[in-house]
Image (cartoon, rainbow, N blue to C red; front, side):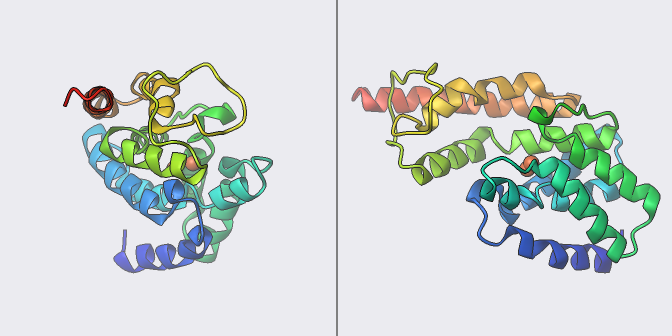
Length: 214
Ligand SMILES: [Fe+2]
Ligand SMILES: [Fe+2]
């Protein structure tokens, strides 16, 4: 892809990320971009499509957050992506490939990634929630909702409103441990395994520090 097109796309996308939650800001899109290229290169995927979807996949995340979940960012993001890419004169057949990736990247929505590019985007996006960056994101999010820093014996089954017990460790036990089982690509599985091991080691150490053992 021409660098000029990519730069124009990035410029168009930036305003949608202004004021977003740090877990889904433009830095998240940039991290996903690095991962889709790394994974996509090994999986034989179309790297041009992947560069475009990395930048666009969460373009409607702010709308979802501001609507308290009433707007689905995968659905709305697909609409926005159509508009943005058409305006830039991107070929229709490629736009369709991009749209499938965006529609299928949200696990809760029910669409299943079918193309290799959609599978790579799905894996890269979920991988950003685990490993060292996942730990960083989990603490950032728990801080934003006023949670305590850590509870070693946190109740994982409490599914009520977000509150003081929604620390990073609870997020790890309740959700992040499952991410490695959700990968579609072989490369995604490999990276997820390593990131999972690091998180286990980190929280094990944290629990030992809390007990005064280290
Ligand atoms: Fe997303
Ligand atoms: Fe994302």
